[in-house]
Length: 296
Ligand code: ATP
Image 1 (cartoon, protein in one colour):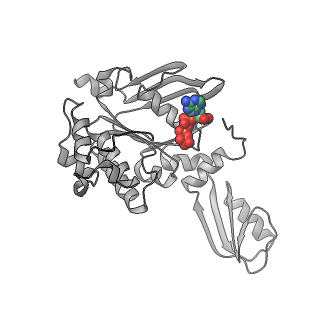
Image 2: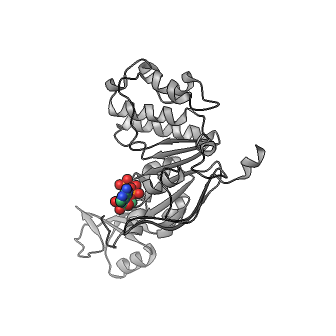
Image 3: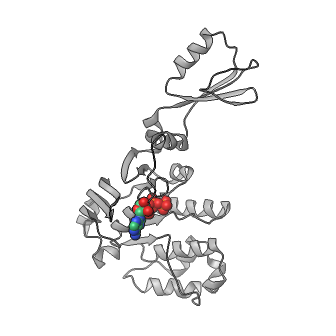
């Protein structure tokens, strides 16, 4: 058992996945050590769900090898140690919340107690409700509880906050952070950069089947190294590098010093100057911008 602790949670070696002529993942190499919380970020069709379904053993790779918790993701013994919350889960609507949780707990050798699962997912009050009666956000929380039933070493979440309102989203993210702090490995795909920033130690950006950035949230921002220069000018500036909003001007630049030097040399009078780091969203847009996106 103790040898398991030395193994990485997930290793992809040269993994490709083709759907007919479409290359959804192209020779991906990825190593996720145990205990890390990782956000997989990318636009629609980037390959996030494909990567997740491969590591859950739901699909097989066209090329390359995948190891999960030191084993083959298709093996039952490995699956029992992984919890997953997928975009397209299906549950019989006539079941009650507590019945669905009891059913899922029965699949695992050492499940978490039902009360703890209900509390973690914020479902205490809904334990005896039928699934048919739940709102979309409540169903998401139930899926989250089901993913945790087996007390998984690796928790995999495919866009878990889709359809949640602001409060439900915040509380689910707080719970995911809590699970990560308990030493679990968490792998979550998302379109939302603020979510990645909030819960992940590491951000892996995928675009059209390639990993285009991999690092801490601040490193990913640093990959682009852009700064936002903002200031007010009473005199109208005719400069297409800036986005103008009334008297306020903003530009993203890799070299704020030379931009400002140039403005001062032109005797542009600026006030209320700020220079700030790009947000993860801006980093992401810059990383994926300017290239034609293949739509299947
Ligand atoms: P989203 O954010 O929209 O969920 P994603 O990053 O999860 O996107 P994938 O679902 O992995 O992306 O899809 C990657 C590419 O593979 C897309 O071009 C998609 O159309 C294609 N694809 C996914 N599943 C299949 C399938 N079963 N058959 C054919 N093509 C598929």
